[in-house]
Image 1 (cartoon, rainbow, N blue to C red):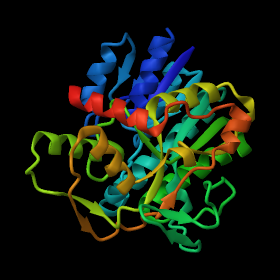
Image 2: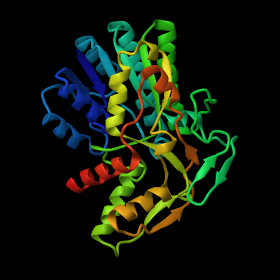
Image 3: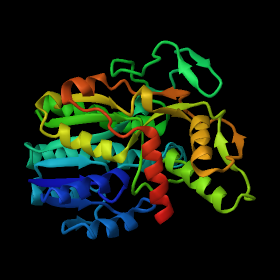
Image 4: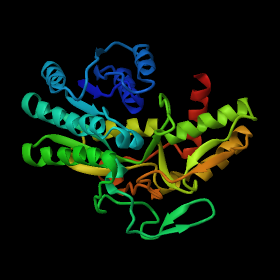
Length: 338
């Protein structure tokens, strides 16, 4: 089988690509190495096996059509994307071209040249907006959504906020519509927070990895300056380790009941963490004191997002296997090796 991974040198893309190689299948990687850490991941991936690498740009329709015509992949894992809310606000055109135009380029090329390909797409919880119309209770270490204490289902209202929410939301809806109108085999995953191996986190994307690195830096230098957080630290996300993400994509690719469907994906309420709860976990694991300074809330930040994963359990037969604490221990060990 032929697998094309767009953004195949990114965090999730490289893990998916490595699994393709582990299974002995034919791999094609599409990535322009724009993202921090992508070149390192490409080198890591090359140590895993042989594949064809395209140093192309998802914004370029000709680049995309060339690859789809040449490869005619059985499966496409579409991970190419601009992934930071802050970048989308600083450069909304870049965000739109990568996320919305890039998705259209891919879908249109598949429609014309490889209509039997299965496309699985990494969307985001940001398509639901800020949840300003809901009620949140502030507890000692976290916020709790009173209307959805066990997580948000796919049926809640779409409400695109920020350029990032608009661009990913547009891509999300094009995926669903190209299934309806053209019969393409598309699956949309609205992800909560993912973390793990090969995630080269930055201050504005990949919060689990970023704060794990801060804890390790404190361990090495206890007198360093405090790091910063935005908001109160009580904002909550459910977290999902990369092994569980890889398992999700491979379980879904041949699930005909998933085609044309959207799924909220995360670790679920039992794997949810606030920043403060993560800090307490890291303090215990590493015997450090997580000293920080507070900044104002980030634009369009959600107090809570926890995915209700019942639909994925029911239709795909998928659920997380790695709990948050075990995943964070693995993340710390990987960071130490870097």
